[in-house]
Amino acid sequence: MRVLLTGGSGDLGLLLARDLAQRGDVPVCLDLRPPRVQRGEFVQGSITDRALLAQILPGIDVVVHIAAWHGIHEVTGQRDAFDFWDVNVTGTFNVLETAVRANITKFVYISSTSVEERFGVYGHTKVLGEEIAQTYVVRHGVNLIALRPRAFIPHWNTDTYKNYLEWTNWFWGGAVHIDDVAQATLLTVDRLVQNPPKNYLCLTVDGAYDYSPDVLANWDADGPGSSFAKQYPNFVALAEKYGLPVAKRPSLKNITQTVQELGYQPRFSLQNLLEELAKFGSAGPPPPLF
Image 1 (cartoon, one colour):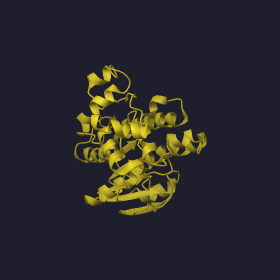
Image 2: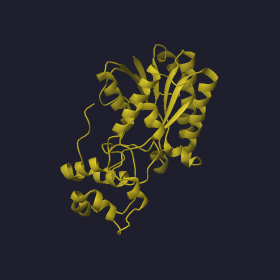
Image 3: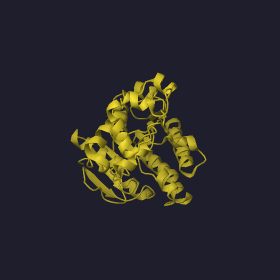
Image 4: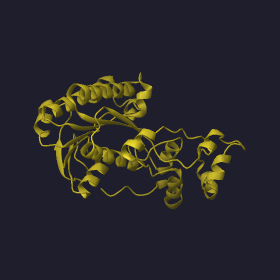
């Protein structure tokens, strides 16, 4: 199976290309920059280039549309509203329209929980991206599943995080690990091939959590940090050493439908994070092998 990964040289694209190749599929990565490790085929270019898309889409079985400017680019001011619109909105339309013209019917759209911030620059483009995606389901009968992951920039992205500790403080309040996003994406690809949905599906992707609903509902009932201490007694000293925000209550997203539709089971929780921090320190574990 040939799977096009737009933005395939990015963090998620690298993991997907590796996993697809390992199971015998052919990843076709489209990106402006070459991947650090090439798996399958690489095409250098942009989703804003309609002529290039028309050349490479014929023969593709499934499109996984990742390419986008992200919330971090809005926060840091690296990109402006024109940039976001050109790639996230026009680029998404380009990929979908060209895919339909190439008779491709299976499509994964990577959206974001930032649609909840619909009037932000990034969030608005994801709202519009989902609307475009849903339109192509209705208008052209595309088998399409949109995934809404939480932010998932990994600790090994040194353009964003200077070390594992900085990433830890971000992850602490509720997040999803990039490995779980990759898992959900592969499950989505398989669902589209084996049992494509008749209607538009939009599924939230969140991480794993160790706290029970009762603990979350009665957070820190015995004082600041008490819920953490009861759940992770072996890591209290570690948390004190690194000044971790133990009183911060994690926020969870509802992934019930995602579990039902895909069989998705997130694996990485705060327990895993604490184990890695204890083992590797503030530098964190090494990047994955691609």
